[in-house]
Amino acid sequence: MIVDALTTFPEMLTAPLSCSIMGRAQAAGKLAFTAYDLRDWTHDRHRTTDDQIYGGGQGLLMKPDPVFDALDDLQQEGPAGTVIFFSPAGRRFDQAMAGELSRKERLIFVCGHYEGMDERVYSRADLVISLGDFVLTGGEMAALAVIDATVRLVPGVLGDAASPVEESFSDGLLEFPQYTRPADCRGLAVPSILLSGDHAKVDAWRRRQSLRRTALLRPDLLDAASLSDDERDFARQVAERHEYGEQDYIDYTARAVRGEG
Image (cartoon, rainbow, N blue to C red; front, top):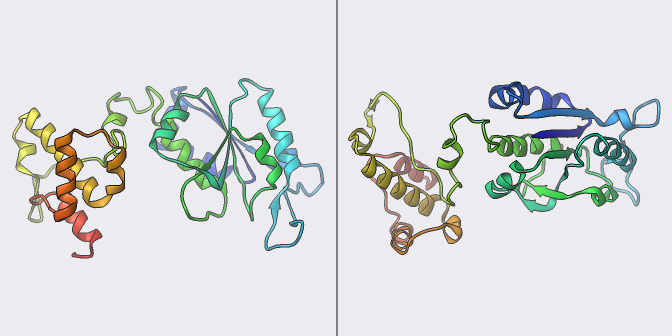
């Protein structure tokens, strides 16, 4: 996958994406990432990318011409790609969108900064994304989140083909709690079913825990999840009774979220 970013702060992207899984993806040829400095498409000696807002207002706005010129040049080199901007008015990013983007040949992220971007640049957008109802200082952090969530779904990036399948949101539910050694840590024991060696029972326990955790912590996800009638009834009962499982992670998490310690 080819991923490009237009930004006034390339170092905000290059350093994080050179580490860990994203770094290995680049080394393995699964990801070709380039952060371009938008200042390279400015036309004054001060390399200005922002200016005052017409009609008045606080802060500075990203100028349109460097963005237009940069996209013209980038899209003449290789595939035109999918051009992505960020805005509170955009489509909310989620795991399903990450899956959609992971199948694209090339993504081009345009990262705004300061007070935002001249409205005219959005005429070049194929997709406008919002991470949520909050404000960041620039689009670089949003781009990092989207790139990471997307590229890790590209076949071969995680190594284990099952890894992205057994995660939160992959089937519409939160992921089940997981444990490693030791079996007892400070009096907190791993659920005995996970030590049984009975894979069928483990799978059933994990499914039930995903349902319980989702019903307690993210009940909004249940409507769109693919559930059997029995599973949906179980989730409803959990939500109504605030039922907790025996000494498992969802117990502690749910209690903490509910302010019960």
